[in-house]
Image 1: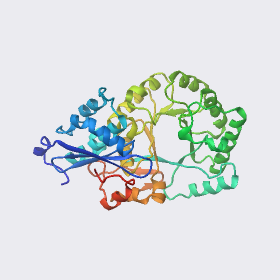
Image 2: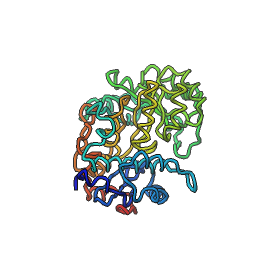
Image 3: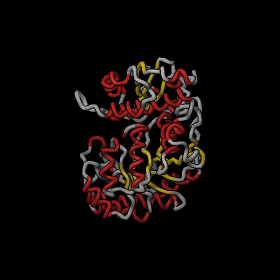
Image 4: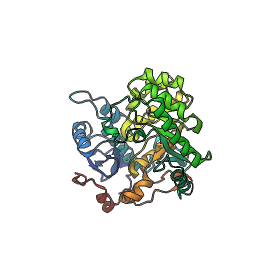
Length: 393
């Protein structure tokens, strides 16, 4: 069943919500089923067991509800405090699935249900740099491949501080927040980034990034170290819990600053936006509140003339959701994608949709089919599952 008649729409209700974790970045697909036979697919920024546990908390709020009441359902889900506070990555996955479902019910693409399209294509950028940024030959070999990449990327997230350059046994997931680098260590960082820029040239743009692990002096020192390579922005250098540190950082940095990939809802973005602590924001649809929550964030940012980019390490589901979001948000600039790496290492993630995700000149065309534009391939989808995960439990 592709869509419903007008007389059927008011009779649709949610009957079940399911989830299963897929390979890649540890994210989970969410499925919202209805009594009409139509269903919506979303993606949540958490593991399968975590998402399924939180779905059980949310099910009493959703089963039997009208799936088109998206704003009301979203606000109901995020308002939960007792016995458990709302888990926003799970809410994000459900919200994306509800928008996909709404498009199928109304036989329209998601972007048309939001605002209509500001653009038919969205710009996306490539994440990944040379294997050895201290070796000029390695840098130039990598840069030549990027310049000849068939998808025609114009922006590369390829610089920053790789802790392994400084600490050979550094493991990010075990590191304490607010690490410090000395001036001598920052000179090493400067050299690596300058090698990348020399190889790539100034006809392409560079993003440099961290993961929120550095302290204020290091962040400021890093900004000074990479000024010469003229990055679009520096991403996620400080932890996001200390707004005063970000304001000091903004005052000291001559390079634009961006953060937000692990921040949740407009309530966490608001202090950064209204205080002028950032030059752009960087939410993630699967972590920050889905399409509904991230549109609220973008609307606030628009009042302050701040651009919006999207963090994205997800599957084709998140990429298509990002396309619809980007098409319908006026101050949207670009989205990250990892689909090119998944095509090489996890081809099943690209094959899970019947239609190929095609990037031309660094631009992804916005789907025109109902919902997100997904036509899932069940056989490929089964190959995408993490070991031990149930197929739509």
